[in-house]
Image (cartoon, rainbow, N blue to C red; front, side, top):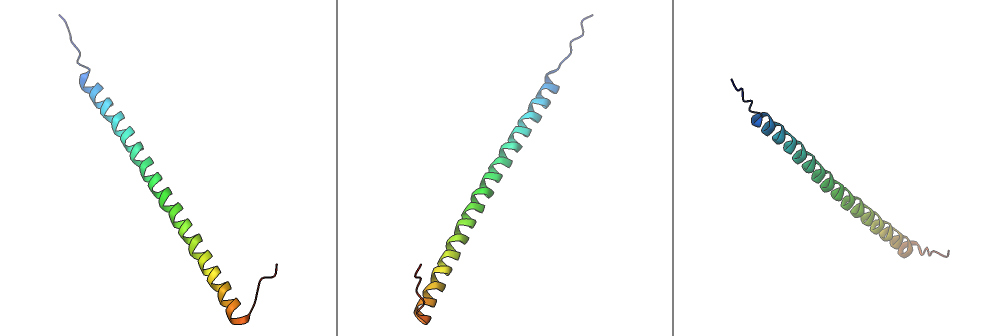
Length: 71
């Protein structure tokens, strides 16, 4: 009597599970990269906005009060 064991189904399940794990890790990495880029862009825009406000404030001080930077 010959007994044949079929391991193809468990192998397919483990292969699919590993592929799902790899896919999920890649998607998480893409999300992290996307949010990292968005955070950098937001920080740059805040810095530019604040520097523009600082330039505008200093221009108002110069024109209204005749304050000049001597140093």
